[in-house]
Structure formats: structure tokens, C-alpha cells
Image 1: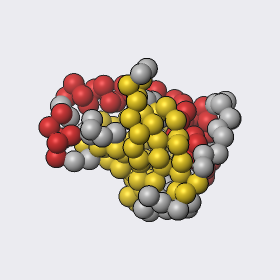
Image 2: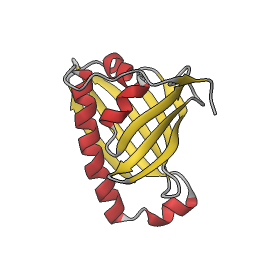
Image 3: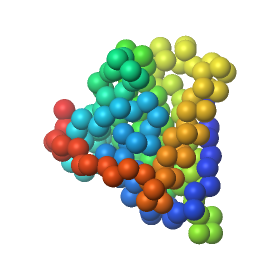
Image 4: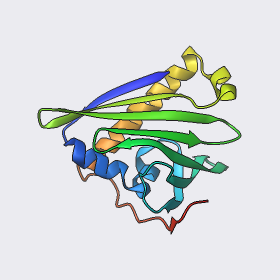
Length: 156
């Protein structure tokens, strides 16, 4: 399991607003290339973002699904990049004065991926998530790129 924390000078409501914008994931999630579409109602439980992940010419189309949501404190996702694997991503937002402590926990989302999750992998995922939370902060503070709305769908 990789756990990453960042104290962000924004309210939980502001951060959850960014997390509620499917288009923002193309910027703040390291490795995300394009948001192809998003289900109406994101981030309701069961809603999905249809994304493209990868680097250079190696790209995969897959989805990220909301497993739990409790605005503005918690969002649990199942991210897929098959055949490479799946991950459970847990985002907790805790108000601390005028800031928010964001705790991002990522772990394998299926038994096969769990075989690949080891201390080295956890370290690499943690390093990636340090950058992801830095980018999330940029968006929350209005410093990131404009995020065009992806097409909305009614599900798969």
C-alpha cells in the first residue's frame, strides 16, 4: 500500500469540487493522458470516467469507477489500466484550519495486481502520487490548465 499526504491551502469543498470535475483527472493524475468521456452524475457511486492512460506511444483505454463518495470528505475509486492491472485509490480530505490534509492511499485492486505490488512498487506509486497531489493543489488554487468538459454518457 502506498500512502501520500499533502496539506493544501484550500477548503475540503474546493478540493472536492476539483475531484468532482472528470476533466481535471487528465491533469492531476500522473499517467492520465485523456478523459474520453464521463458518466452523468460523476462522482456518484457507480459512475465512471472513461480515460486513456500511458506514456508516449503506449496508451490504454479503460475506466475509473467511483466505489464510495462522501462529499467533501472522502472519495474511493477503482482505477483500471488493463491488462496492466487495477488499483483502489482512497482520497480522504480533512479540514485543518484554512487548509485541507489530503491523504491518498493506493493499493492493488485485484489479486493479480497484488502480486506485482511490493515495497519497490509502493515506493514508485508514492512518488507518482506526490506529484499527483501537487497537481491537485494547482487546480484547487486555480493555477492549473483549463479543463474542457469531456463528453457525458449514461454509462457503459
